[in-house]
Length: 476
Image (cartoon, rainbow, N blue to C red; front, side, top):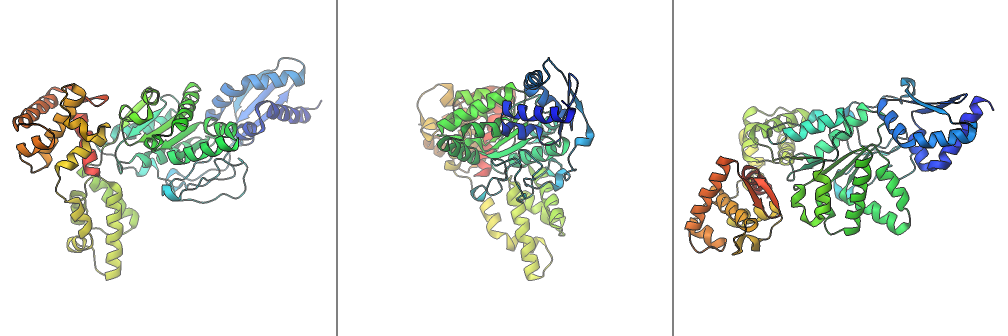
């Protein structure tokens, strides 16, 4: 039997053994099989895919080779750069597309209500790619004191994928979680051209899972979500109440972690605060690396305003950027939206951008950001940050899980509202204003000593608990 015919039969038998979809996924692009006597050589385009093939398919290749050759073959894996596909764009230019050369593509989530999957759940060899919005890159992420750890972890992940998995990013809306997820996708696709990466929102994961469950396509769904090198899922808090989907997600996490694949998840709260998803989910996610992101502080907001102005290609005076960074607290999207409106107003009125024009054009935005904080806002922020209900903060029990968050709420009320101590004590169901004074002293002591406090079902350093509640307060 000549070499070409052996290779053809080897590929056909291997496809039958592992399944045609998995074969198309792993062996159709950037992989070459050759046979020389009892030697089978698997040529791959880069070291990343080489390790994946060796771990998953070495036994299958040996078994099929023995059937065809009549003896146990020697199997070797080599990197052959000639097998690399055509270069893709730099990370800053990567768009959310589904090129035919990709076996697994990302799913652009953009505006989640209008998002549609690209080619992730179709045939890997689909025809013309569909174009979507451009994905963000790590290079355009503005690093500040509140997101530095998450950014560094994202960079390290790209350099050493699979070493720390899963990576879980959490923070309030507008803190940069989605930007980092998209940046990881872009960087991984650039660094490892054969990397099979899949990006989904929680809504898309749920929708595809339910379609597969009811349509009998569950095995295919699991191959598409588990037979990848990189899986990213955004907004995991929206899995709350979806019991079957949570179980499927947990099994997916287990499969990827056991095989050393890279998993990245993002949510609006820390794992131990996502009580609706259950303790099993929290344990799985906490076993990797958990990084929190805070809303941007003033220097970071100023940098975001400067970067956005440069991207828009318009001259924004420094005093205008400083005003926006001072008045619009925390959310990078709000700053970008304000600059978009300011540029449009300047062009419509044919006036240069000044502090006066900005104040007039953005009056409603700035007024909304300058609203007075009420006691109800403090209550809502603390409850949202730690998965509590208002009744918890008014409960008469003296357990730490109840008393600690109540004291934090009183401390925040003293800091951010104009309410008197008697008003604060009445609001939180206490009888005397001295309770508020005592709570304020207690929390100040926690902060000074670096004390760990129990808040709801989780434990936090006092400074971290305060920072988390303040982020929720700023985000509304």
